[in-house]
Image (cartoon, rainbow, N blue to C red; front, side, top):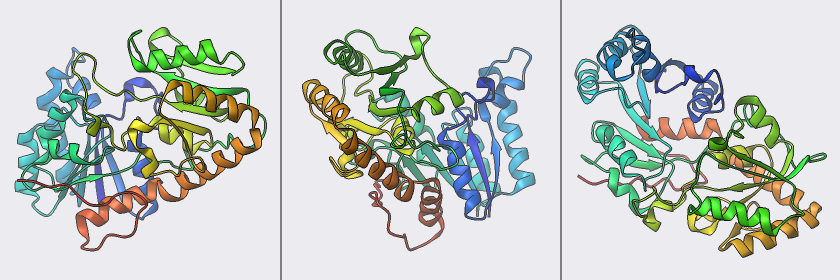
Length: 351
């Protein structure tokens, strides 16, 4: 099968995010025996005009995509955050190539109304949509009876190659986020740990403060840390939040932690115990006090920490990997029967 992946492959970032979901999914399709071509819509748009402007390059980018499709004639086109691609272009694809399946993949939070709007720009024109949130919130992005499926944050042995549960660790806890104001729950949690758990050795990184890690430096550092705190946002600043929007959601850092063998901690509000068994594959907490107590416990009980971390690593690599995600997408798009997966497979739909 010929598959075209359309989305931001971030050429401008010089491989800083080589572990992006896009690239792991491509590996999955390839391992299943399919040929994959990529089209980086944002980069093509910028390169299409002398101002290096994405907005100014929308028209030539869409024309270039149609050239790709005409020559490659894909059986499947997957759009991941491909915001430069217009509805008119998608309708043209559907008209000229009616047997080509179209799918949309989005890994951002559904509590962000801007993200919901971006998804809905295409969702009703697809054959299926896939997001990393599950539950009632999926009705926000249901249109025209097009199914919306949950798909997990995936790991890939070729990418998440660390085994932090083996050997010596240079830090007890990896803790990172992009940016957070002092009233943000992530900021509050991080600084309480720093203040109240002084014996825990941190690898602490905040991109907005210039201490962020990217590329191989990030992956290598994860493999050196014993534990990882999965701090995900709970709401879009100033816009409130709905607990339904958090169900089984996480940033892709979850896959980086689990895939590299860190003992991973997650807030119970995200219901990731639907994917990982509590105290056997992942550690959950309901308050910062509980989190701090558990961090101290697993620092002192290293054998227990390693055992749970290895079990979580094994679960991630055997149940939530790139090949299963690719297979799931192909089955839900082209087959009438779906294999057994260790995540919810029931789609949400409405007219």
